[in-house]
Image (cartoon, rainbow, N blue to C red; front, side, top):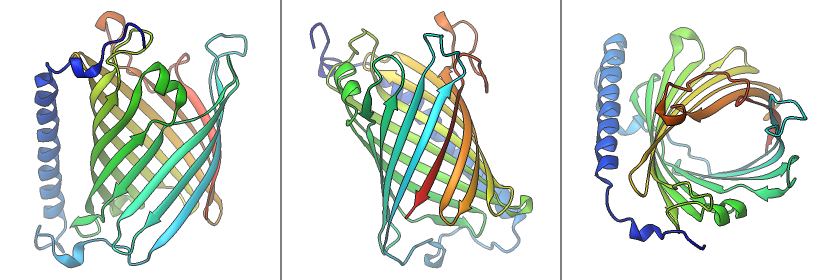
Length: 302
């Protein structure tokens, strides 16, 4: 690409990233210690924090599942507004669970856009390897380690952003709170290394090389068929020149199982930069009439 700098020419300035990474990891470790100690004290049936072999959660069945889905999404703008968008997505998500409990999950989407070029394209393909969860506190707190990779199958992103993939580590804590029924809180930390051929996009905007994302998801089963999910993401990224970017996401979703392994769902999400132009003020908001997105869909697992 004419006028773009190669990323391997940007070999300095990552000290800021590693300092931020160590800080966030320390916070996660302290959170784990505090939460484990508090729940340990509350659970009289738990006599030790050691991890005996029988506390490892394993699936002894080898199983292949395929989830197919379709989803429509749009923002809240009028049809005449140039910022209006509408998309229809076909979801392809096979999952293979090995006999030792290790799971391999692959997802790619086919997206049809109904504005501008009205193009149909593949999204990037996400591959996740999940190790068996370990019970830190029986029936209450679990730890899981996930490894992720993203393959550059979105042609436009491949060309415009010179995107070549992502590798990631994803430690996860899962907290079950039986005192409040089927309430589950999941905290996942994403440590991502992005790969680009060039350090900037065709537009001149810098590409992000490293990112650290923290996701908190709250899931509650209202009934056996109806469930509510609340999601909050905070992401901090560093470009190849060590400039930082901060983004957020708030999402809410309601799902209903209409048949066995068949669900319909509706949701809303708002995402964007944490700071306003020139780092003035904050854009943090669960809802925004310009950037909010609504969606709905149906999924079936075979």
